[in-house]
Image 1 (cartoon, rainbow, N blue to C red):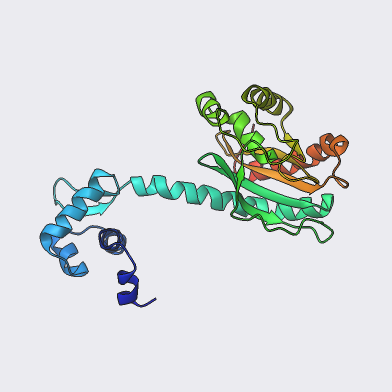
Image 2 (image 1 turned 90 degrees about the vertical axis):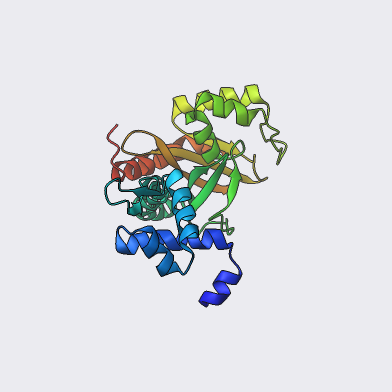
Length: 257
């Protein structure tokens, strides 16, 4: 996209703020006048942009030189992306082996707001599941991955989510808060979550938590398959295999628990 076209479709103040941070990334530290000259804006406008960015921690000002540099808040923002990239790096080869071992679809999900979001999917050649779930937000109360997040999140957050309203996708979908609270406790105790035709008729799944180096649950790895190939009675055995895979991914992320 050309520069003029890009600017015509953007919010000017946001575009300028990004330009300021890009300039700081290149130069290290600069003053108000240099920012104004480089971006082609009035000095007062550059000052207001820098002041706003500083207030949000995205930019810092040296007390001695009065020049500006990128702030620590950017590190916090980038850490989320970095964490997901680390999970993907560790999970891809493990998921490929798990998919071939189970002959089913394997997904990796992370928690985003109140949804489980699939960030990776590996489909076995013999899998009957052809839908690409990558990037999808899935309901936290009706998925195996969601059960893991529900069982490990702070109690006040879980209670807020379970107050609903929660959608009923099939006749098997659990949506009563008390029932879901009890299932969250069971999920935490046994170390895996499972669904039997709760999101879709004919689709079952089992999910296991992935831990970061500090022990936090940062993702889940799940196996999904048609009910006739992944019946409810087989889920505990499949869960053992998924636990091994999740442990390998967690170990790659530095978890030694």
